[in-house]
Image (cartoon, rainbow over the protein chains, first blue to last red):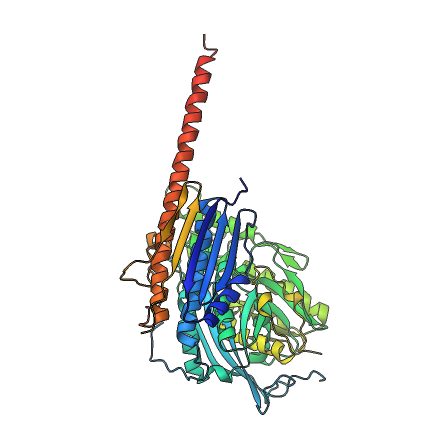
Length: 97
Length: 373
Length: 112
């Protein structure tokens, strides 16, 4: 039962190696809950972030992977808006939020 | 004062600026604060450059689920950070640090915000400062009201604590043994299906103003602590009888025989809970021989609570109650920026690997290095 | 625009020994995913979703975010179906067991 026989890996390319490295560091901090049922590994290969999920069932992977992708999307949005723009003054139109 | 708050200032700069991110419950807040060098004082106040908040509001009768709350935060956080920077007129290079709520709070929402904090920290090469949410409330309350060494009543949807400062710690004198006072009010609002917009507690407060009859409820102060789950169960069963279609035993006022209304229940619930809060606060005042009370947290914006607390301290010599308006007492990013910056000015930074958020993070775990009184 | 950034994924399990590959495909892609909507509880209670993600910008990263949303949907739907299969095959087994056991019960019935 404790065999991690369900595996899913996702490869996410970024604009450069540095972004992939930052994404990996951001993701790798948080511990995996239920570590006897699920293992998650984050690796960087050049400009790619590789996330590997190894679990005892599809269910544990299903929950984990969607959360990881959600977080990576936040990271991507940060890169898109803020990378190289620390000396830019943001000026926003009156947006309704 | 021997604490030196200026050791970590950027060379040639006469001030610090910090970004603060809060998302421990259903509010996402981004704040930017400025401290000029030197001790904060009446003539050297912290300056709020931006304080933006967006609240995840669930439909009437529903609480906010962690999943939808986290989704709200992650889908808005980048836009809110951009907006705060534009409102403040501040660039990344102007910042000294990025402060984020590390706990206590709801796991998924906390995590969705720290992801943005970590990424931005690496992109702009800025140190992170993990902040205890409760200490954020306390420090912002002290700064806004300039109350020096008050007993703090911290009342919100997730926390109910009476706190007093001693030897570089905020020590908890009394607290709830079960649910928080804001949670008790919110859940009763759901029972009555009162809207959650702008806030369930606010809507209860408005209804309570129209209440005429006091319905006796359990009064459960236990030493310095209090319990509220029994009160909630009690009033929920009264409400259930009220809305029951089977007729049966609807509550009536003992003196006049008039039917008890939802407004009466809101009034009675507030009076009971707030009397308990006032009682334990009064005991803490006696303990530490203080006459100042600072009320922080979302329930702190309740005017009836402020009024009842005012009546209590009026009898004490030089007694005073301090509270802030909703910009600062409801969860916000500026308090995280402010408390985080105080820590940063003492050299407290949080290495990336230590930025895991935690649902439990006690107020008294924080080393209040920036105070030495 | 610079080179397209395209995420890919690969799945393997005892029920899928040869593996299964995911690609976002040709699109169109959007940051609004089928499987990342607000809870049904909120919608059923008359709530609205005012928290949809920001639109993808016309940048490599913006398009990556949209493609990642598509692949996230594909993975989520695939795994959810797998879970249903797993569950229904388990239910079948349970049913089988129940029937067999009941059969045994019937055979050994002490009902005179």
